[in-house]
Length: 350
Image (cartoon, rainbow, N blue to C red; front, side):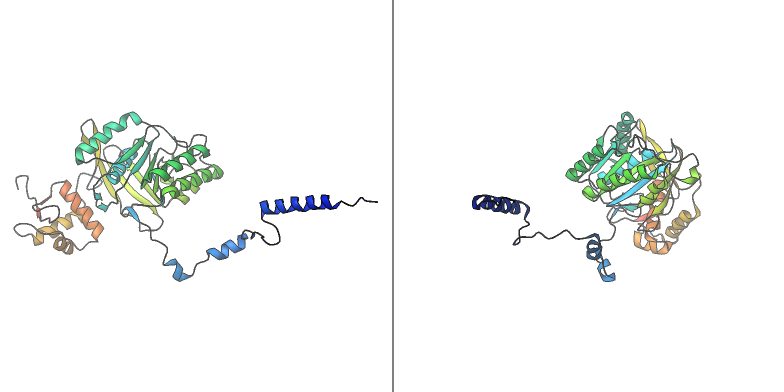
């Protein structure tokens, strides 16, 4: 026959159960709610069409090119000027300059990971500061940070969460993903998840600088899921003398029109400036904007509004043409920055 517990033993059992219930919160009077099921979580996230209107629109970092809270890729062949352009973007965003090649800029802190060639970067930054007479709020990490490795990716995300940069540049992707099988979907997915972790740490733009594949027409090197994850993709073609920038993907905005750049010598290095075309001539569309100014030119100069109206081009196109014409000394501003008055430069002595 089974021995029944004594009253003292029963009291001890009850006390032990009460203690366990207090610890776990599962007694009859205090039952914890079960976590929502996956189906309940899906239902809770559902939005009406009206709800969608309250989701914030993409906020430009460089209007028409880069956006906050996004992933971006700048890619091209070796020696094509990728790092020059990436540094120019970083320095412009980190400075007080309002425009990058006629695109409006939202300024803020930039974190730049120099994964290769750190020794030459100081010459490029000094050249940029000399040309633009401006300082840039950029923090430089002079070594690679392996964003394929979870510990280092988490560490970078932690730093980004603390510093709150608006732009993080990883230059280059290959040097920053050691151990990655770049053609493998699984490995690429891990890196994408880590880049998203860094992005969401400060709702910043994370821009990777990457290489083209052997077949340049096939786009960036590696697994296609990398491009699929990007909000923005920008291709650079050319050499140190002439660079073509082409916006090959823009997830939530119109793709920016192609832009021609070139490297102009400055001090011990060079700076990126806008070029007018794919040869030494001036594109017909830019000449038409110049002719529009000539057709309404008056003594003392013409303000931007009437000139743009006469040119009959979209705002962004007009500002790009105006900058190119000013850079190449085909147009001069006789007024001030706040109240410009433009005239055509008919010769060097005008």
